[in-house]
Length: 405
Image (cartoon, rainbow, N blue to C red; front, side, top):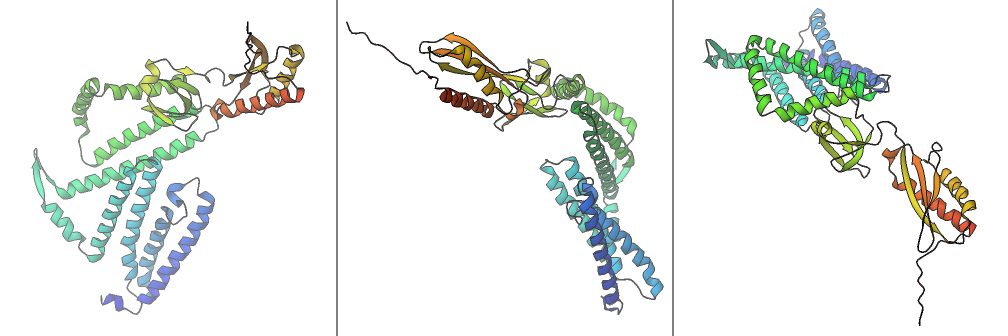
């Protein structure tokens, strides 16, 4: 506390405030330009990304080295260094977890634990209790096989593994985002490449993490054999779904955007994961379909060869109507409806001699079935109704004639 009464503390506070203000302004300007391309570095507003603590930490470290040249001993700058390091760790880990798992509820739990550990370490460092805490952790040890393992070594190994895996997740998320934004129309091909790259990076990152933790990788041979037995018995469904996902993406029998009907559920494929496929119905409901089901069962795909879909509607006119003149007019009225395709053109056919009138069937095609068929069918019916009323064509209704003897 005596050091805090030093007359240069006020100057340190001013220098630190100017540094943070300058870095904040710079990061805010960069965030306005690169917000969409680098969520990890600049975040949403600049201050919630990793770039702000990086630049602030670099500036504080430089001031901490230059301050003794001015004939003063840094106090606040030394306190700022562990705080900025903790802030950097929190921002980097949180941003990477959100980028890698955007919809996982466990991300918030991980963020909370990372924050507690980072700020706890910063408090121990500032108060000078860090060496004593490390000695206490080193004193807690036990025999594991032929070697002695301490709690400190386990914690250091866990931290190194976490950092390697977080870095791998960040790299895989960046590569996946770049691949999915590539200038190609084949979204399924980009998706399978992104999944393979992510799986490969996670595998390599896991090996590096285990090696950095001091685990002998030769022991993984036994683990691989046990894992193979487990997959053969208890995890065969899970493995089948993963393999089926890669088969679907490779064969392109189902693609993102296709209209399909599987297991009685009809909708548009919005995403193909390695384990399951998401099918979204036109009413907004979503179905999570295991990939094995898409391989082993019959799937109706209305968009595989051609995205065009034929729709029909029925109407009746009186028996005294001039059908030869009426059919081309009805066809032209349907053709003028938005979303109705000109090729193939709509067709109007006399389908049946009904009990009350002539039954006509109208067939028309649309090219965007993912937008639903109810609205376009309603527009076609309204156009037909307006035309029949303008022409004065009778729309028959059920009539019965009773003969009294």
